[in-house]
Length: 620
Image (cartoon, rainbow, N blue to C red; front, side):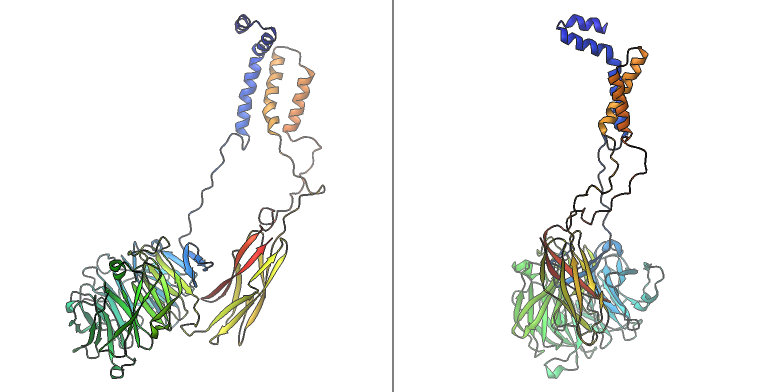
């Protein structure tokens, strides 16, 4: 029927022959097409979409990102390395606030104490690249965005704006033997002399804590005797000047001779710097109450080590006056008449929040611009200079309340921690000239600063470590930032600069592009041609239908079938074991070291001290 229909429709003789052929052989064609499709689907890689690789989620703990060319990973920086970072989710909080530190006098281990909305987290940062989250002390009452803490005699004193919170006391010696961290701790004692407080300042020289912003004492300093650390006792009030936001209380040793040896608090009282003599807790004396032009909200401040100057941060002047980040510089040679001698204005717009001074450096937590470190060498002439920074809020430096809440720069190792409101705990290592902590330390340098090589050659540098302050420990060396197909070796691999500088020869070796294999190289067995796989079923069907119809089998068809069978089975030679695989190509896919200019970071580590610098390698 199909043949008659085709003959009736087409009269052209050649076309009729083609159609008759199709009509006679359509079962062969249909069978071949069907089997071909099935085989194509079965052969790996045919007619299948490629799998899309899904990147594994990033590890929660971020470690070891040196500051290179202004960046430590995604964080803008200068002279500050990121040792590690613990996101809030890893330390049990939804938002962060204050941070303080404790160095165990028995073991010299260092701990970060970070305030959270839900309580306080304790982290062992003795090895700053491998911090250990030890556990959490839950809030005494309800969660709060505000928490503040300081340390005295191996005990932490924690206050919060949460109603009914009072002051928690926690014996930090419990952190020495945490068997299965993280643990949930319980408070050692509780002080209920006030329901809530905004901040707490501890004078470790006298054993008194000063809670500020409570519902008692007109919001002024609520004094607590903590000389018996686990048994705090109410010691009195400073209420003459109303609300105090924060304070630093010291045994004064500054230029005002009449007040040397007295216990004095420098208070940030919303719109004034208020200085109070609290030596007699029953009768505190306000020495001065000084306002200043351009005030927004007098927030917090810190004395220089000689007690001659006071740096004050105003939390709202950036927003209200549309100015850059400001630090107000006060001279206090006379506690009755402090004088603002200047203003340091930074290059950022961020709001300043908290700051502390170690040696000749001020460490500031400035919300969206992160940690800022100022060189105070020129403070007598109100000339401050930014020496280093680490921006924990890379998106921008605008005047908004995000990012860095506080910093703690007093660890003997030189490690500095920063608490991020939305981020978590940053463990940092500034590289500051002058070694502000005065601790055993070392500096490193390399010569030459750069080298140019052709692919396949090596660049040689000399690294020198110079000890400071009687440093005599071993320094291990390694490289990062190497391009593909490049290695870095040190001779020796570790330095011991006891008594003087020590050097190591650094060799950075590149790889030439790999040559094409010659005729003697091992030859991989070729894969069967895809065309052979596809045509083989078609010829098999032709053979099948020819036999069924008893049609003569053309020799050409049989020959083609045998050829395709041989090709599809990988034929073409005698059966023999497969040749050994070729040697693996060099790193980089066998292309050698890519040409270009590279900043290679050389890292020198000794315990918790880490120094890094870059050399430039040009590969041609």
